[in-house]
Amino acid sequence: MACVSRVVVRAVRPRAFINCSKPRASTAGPSYSTDAGASTGENPAGAAEKPKKGFAAAYELQSDLKLQQQEERSGGGSAAQPARRSSARQDASFASLLRHSPLMQMGPAKDKTVIGKVFHVVQDDLYIDFGGKFHCVCKRPEADGERYRRGSRVRLRLEDLELTSRFLGASTDTTLLEADATLLGLVESREGKAKE
Amino acid sequence: MAARVLMKAIHSLRSPGVVGAALSCNGHTFSSAAAAARPAAPSVDAGVNEKILNVPLTQPDYFRLSELFTVKDLFEARVHLGHKKGCRHRLMEPYLFGSRLDVDIIDLEQTADHLQRALNFTAHVAYRGGIVLFVSRRRQFAHLVERTAQECGEYAHTRYWQGGLLTNAPVQYGPGVRLPDLIVFLSTLNNVFQTHVGIRDAAKMNIPTVGIVDSNCNPSLVTYPVPGNDDTPVAMELYCRLLKMTINRAKDKRKRMELLKGI
Image (cartoon, rainbow over all chains, first blue to last red; front, side, top):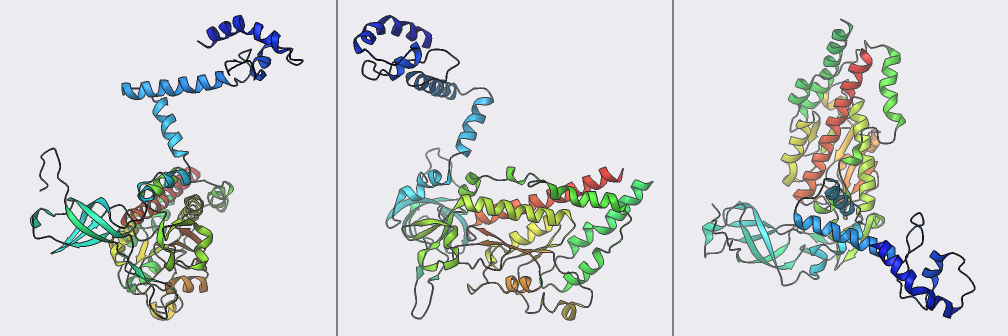
């Protein structure tokens, strides 16, 4: 496809090239790409040995991405494809991982609704983990109390990610090692499976 | 024939049965078992022994521990989450990436580097037959730490730390006690948010320490600090799993090297 476009460009270009009267460009390849006025970026580099610049590089990148997308959609793909994708994900820096993480995207924790999972129950206290640094502890509600077991998914409204406070005379905050949230209710699963 | 003699010597040096039974809550049986378990009885050729001990020191990552974890694994285990800004220790500021809405974020690029060094050191200590002691005063993870220690054939101390445990050991546990060669602190704070006494005592007794330091901990005096979250169960399970894999890998490597060189 790239060679076809090269042929097309060579047929069209010379007219514009003569009009522009450039002193440089002895070879055909680089002159097309540096001809900024006449071209609209449709200048492939000349030989295949030269590193592709401009449109050719962009075209190759886009066709690779499209191929990747098609293979993803087909669900198959060779072993090389998943390896390339996983290595790309592993190369993602900590800063970009952090930036796109739900905890950062959420913003201030006050009055945000999250889904948590009950990981421990002590009579009427439910210890719920919602993906933050700490868990929160909520009282078992009267409505549907028996349905709150270990492993139940619940909806919470967060107040604070960590309960800390500076007391008089202290040099650092005292922390309770707990988050603060209000229990809104169970997450109803559509599949109809009841949590045992 | 020589190989069989060699195997017997190896088993007497590193009898795993005695090691496993020596795990104890209050540390009293720790000393007597340690004294009995590892007598020095080298019946190996001196040159071969030197080769076994010196070859791993020539390469930076002899046990290939960098393939055990990635920054993404640390991120998914919530290792980067620190305490609130008000709880921050001044000396942890170099290890922090920043602070977001008052919550400190630990820089995982630095953590990965520190963790790699700490695991490498632990592996070398385990390879050379050293005793590793896991210490944590967090009651939430006491069982996890003890189970980790048991599964890799090392020791754990997750209860009240008596004052003279390291510094007064010959008096408290009898003469000729062997102290640990490495102490791994899975949380460097005790139950009242002060630095664990074991860090200072290990420094006094010239015992190297590896410590997971959170944003409210003091990283000084820890030989190999690893800045990271020590409050979330996922993070603690990750550390325990990595340490267990490191120690087991190092011990297996040692057995293989001895078999190879012995022949």
